[in-house]
Length: 260
Image (tube, rainbow, N blue to C red; front, side, top):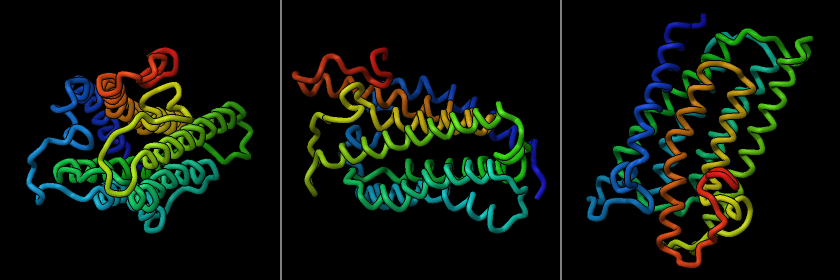
């Protein structure tokens, strides 16, 4: 399969422009921009909502399945670097689809959000998979390009550090509740000692590392979209914690330790 550069550029720039348009919308009050989880709109008909576990499974699955189908059903260029990057991308979404979704204790999610997330994951799964399998031109890790090797190693290290933070933070949040509970408590431990949005910080670090390692417009646009999408949500969570809990630690920041 040949690289469709025009389509890759179109999707990448769409992500960048979409992120810029999304940022002010996400920065508004949470009851306007993110009507799910703790900000879910009351009184929404049950038929318009999807159980949390099913919602996460359906919306994350395309990001795992689409690159895998591209790998299995199309001819791709060989390369250890490309294999590692595709593997890290699919690893994240394998966990989100088959592990996180089965363990979450979240609230039902509105169907429009599930459908829009599934659509995004389908397009982004194709974009990242096609870029890595059919467009990337750098060689394997055995190539003499030391700069490429250093960038790939640093990016992958940042990706896995972010993934560890993300998984550990999700575990802390999940264990704050007993099965059937819907109350919110102050998260303690791990990166939550420094920021309120530790799980969001972990995911942003993941895709920043992925962008550094792959060094491409599609990966950079995805990392930027992630920042604009979930960064504001960390801020709103931080404000919500401060307003709900009078004893909330004053030293915690919203997203960036010691800064923001």
